[in-house]
Amino acid sequence: MPRQPDPELEGRILHAADVLWRRGGEQALTMRAVAQAAGTNTPAVYRRFKNREDLIRGLLLRIVARLRRYFEQGQSLQQMAETYVEFALKTPHDYELFYSYGTLLNRRTGGKQRRPIRESRPNFGLVEQMAAKELGGTPDDHTELALQLWSLLHGMTMLLLNKSLPDGHDAELRDACRTAVKTLIANAKQKR
Image (tube, rainbow, N blue to C red; front, side):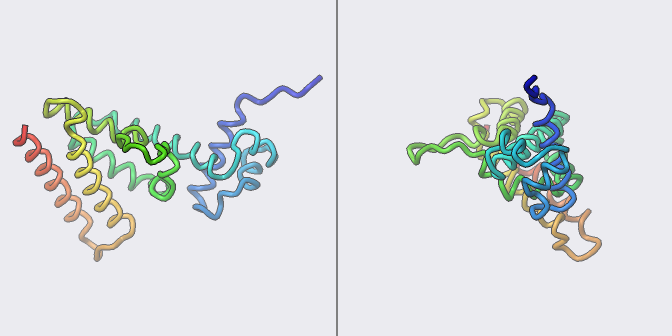
């Protein structure tokens, strides 16, 4: 009787890859190590993920889903900003993976046209939607604000994760960032 495919194997492979990444970063993420951690063999991993890049894309989609759950807890742009930072600080390896390999989520356009950011970064679209809900207009009206917020929050988060500030200044930086978020939102309201 032929062997039946294991319907849970792909999930186990992704879980194993996730654990390996969190423990050891990029160096730990080999197809052989993933197979061993998932309790399978390397050819089985390659049947589900054609290469390491495809496996990383699978991990990225899991990270996007986790971040989405964080974002969905926010009832305002300010709360979404806080959840973004909290997500990054609680899961720094996820954050690193996302910003090291996030371009794997980009759809190729063949150089013909620019696509909205939300197509490759669905959570960016959530920020645009929240801005439309809070400030009026359509999500397309708030791409610039979403980019401003993203740039600000990512910069502050990287400073925190890399411990770039002298000891004792993290709270001050976070307060300054909160003030900047409020200012960006207030300025966007005035423009409406």
